[in-house]
Length: 410
Image 1 (cartoon, rainbow, N blue to C red):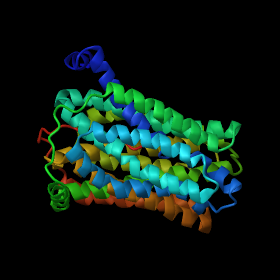
Image 2 (cartoon, one colour; image 1 turned 135 degrees about the horizontal axis):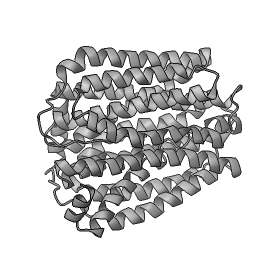
Image 3 (tube, one colour; image 1 turned 90 degrees about the vertical axis):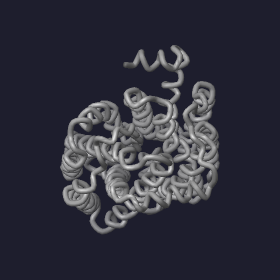
Image 4 (tube, rainbow, N blue to C red; image 1 turned 120 degrees about the horizontal axis):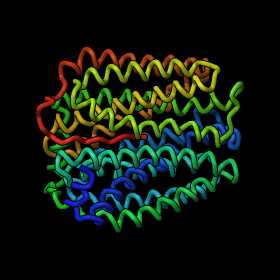
């Protein structure tokens, strides 16, 4: 299958195009969560509260939620590459500007800017894949893209911890910025303009199409689950860094960055989950994945580092499987204007991430990590009940024959 896809796309040129799709995923998530391993460091350097330094995460997630639907409208009008490439370059520039920030408020501002730029990369990439490859080919190309997002999310966090352990924190963003600029040049050279793109004629039509999604009940069910998914993931991986930085673990920035290696399991889980989703109803996969993720979060209450690592591995693996189901559901629930449909999903998804980066922080001040775990597990339980009661009834038609669309947020 892989060789057939590359051959249809023009041999070596096709290989570059598919690889460029993977680089797009890498660039989208290189910066987005890169401050998570730095939060204990920022807490000490800026003498700020845990909730205050967590704004370096929540500002970006809020900005993604605000920008995503409008990015989808712009991409439906201007084309995919014309949105993706400038956004990657600007992500690199904004990282360099973070390095010039004199204090925490400056970092939070430029992180918000990065959040505004990020959906212009990943939300549009989903539409690009679905339009440029046939249904039987899109699975392989999507797996390349997903692998890029997972590796990019891990590398951003790991590099943050590694660089900050050896140099001052501004060097983290200098390294990220230069890497994004270099990769933007490669993607610009290797990713051709979309050939199957159908332009939306005007902003009014794009807005009407986007508003029409709110009358689609299966789509709204998908958006509701998406909210809870990123709430769980961001809440867990933002505040567990504080938990692991304290005794009995006392991990430094490099090791805190290294724990995100569990994300690499997503590169293996995603293709397997994609195959399972061809055979099982979405509600069964969702309920199973949510149960696994909830058990993993509870397991992090252990004072054994290995059990904590197992817990966060189960947590993120469950979330990746949920992402497969919800993103497949988007393309099964909507026909036209897929970029705006994905954009709205990203808005709900990242609203969940924003709330998930704030509420556990408030609870941390009350009772530490156990209170955070209770909150996250409760949200996952609500999602599980919603899946069993609502999703099962509204699940999109699995026989629709529409192409898959997968956007994994690392």
